[in-house]
Length: 208
Length: 97
Image (cartoon, rainbow over all chains, first blue to last red; front, side, top):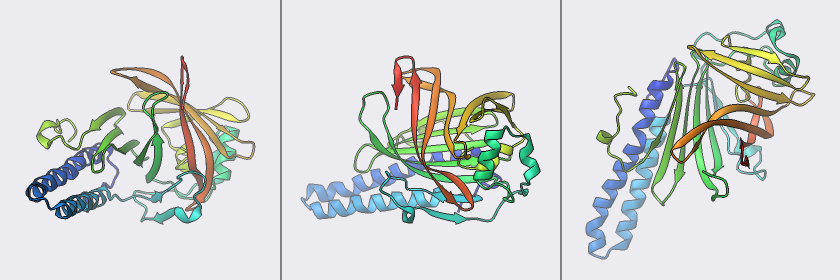
């Protein structure tokens, strides 16, 4: 399992950059596998080829997205009808040197922020060095356009501030667009990733 | 900041009070600086955040006001954090959300 401890947004972004291609390679493989079955009119076998490709690409996603973090938050706020049962939370071993927050630490903050810190219960909590967050979103790209359901994952690092945000938007049954945004060493970058692009096409050198 | 409240105390973030319900956060990292305005209810519940962000329209992009309105919060692993939120752009041609 690949881990990024301490958090390095650039390294993580470079790693995530390869994933859609991995999923895409499964997709291409399944197409190649399905062609002879399709030609010999065996649609059920074709379906199995696609199902296999999909499960493999999902496994690849799950395997590669793993990351160590202080708080692992999986939130499924898919509309107000969802209850607390849909919210899962796991704590991982803290990394770095977390510090316990004291009341005196809040004195430097403006009053509304201080009230919020009290309300959010940061007193006696330990500083968090990394956070992973999964979101289920509805996105539209321009005013008046159709809403598209999307899944996004975010990794935050706070000791050396960094951020990686990856969202995937399904466009066909097996194909998704990926957008990867990252902020590392004070520099923000973004890239659209297409699953059918072969690795050699993408300029990975500037990421790694 | 809302998803990980302890970040408010990070050494690279400074705060300026605006009024009794909002404050401005300024983040400075490696010579880059950005700021955002956060608002809170009187009892400290996070309500909104707004900042300037690049808005892409076709191939061109420009800095526009971008905001998040928090619709639902919950206590997860000790912290009170947003569960559901709505994101919007405030463009010269009108609000886009």
